[in-house]
Length: 342
View 1 (tube, rainbow, N blue to C red):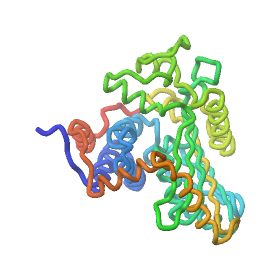
View 2 (view 1 turned 180 degrees about the vertical axis):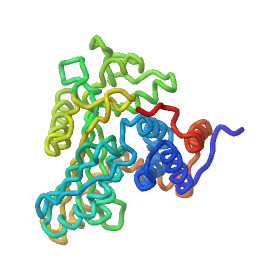
View 3 (view 1 turned 30 degrees about the vertical axis):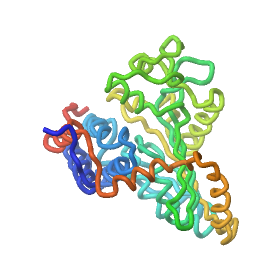
């Protein structure tokens, strides 16, 4: 048997939805999550693609996340929207809130959406790009369970606490910046552990606070914040926006995204949408292109997100996946998650 399987994105999305439904996720919630899984594979982000899906399935089966949750939307003001995910997946909760956010931003120039009591949302760039496709600038933050120590410490306190930014461009795909507050996302360390490969220097410390290249030691220790104390500041800022404003769990209160212990993590997401024409007028798009052209005058310079767009171009008709990954997800689609319900 070949070591790879070539699948279209529709096939990936369908398979992912089947695996989730078999693991006790409602079809409408499974559809929202599966769409993001296919998009991750399309964009070359395999570590949050199909290989990560069994974690979602296991957590639905053991009730770390409520696969049948029905998110509830509350319009707090003309420009403030809140969605309670009800300990369910963030994807359907965000999908519920985005239309109201878009309408509010277009009417008032700026609006915000808070999502509370939710589970991990995967790639933030996936969501902000949708807003940029609607002609809006978007900034998104999301907090997570503890995996990075405050600068100077050795005990995890903040999550990788990512943030993403997207801006629409004339004649081009939106510019998307998507990064964590840590040097690397925790899923990259898990991926290194599963493949038995060492970590690069500067990614992590062990439980004693000593720099390590051992993925297992890093998982017992802490990821490092990006840029030292500056990454610590970013993680703190993200926690305040994503968890503080919505009343979600702070990172240090959230149960792990990596196991079935501790109940739902009840983390949060926060999205700000801005209509650039409301602030800058119709000349904004042209001025942006002028600046981005100047940035790229050095031949070796890439814009953020260029690698993701290149992956889309190279795999426009589908992607080659590890046959073992596909076989695992097919087993989940057939039998559901092996994790016991709690």
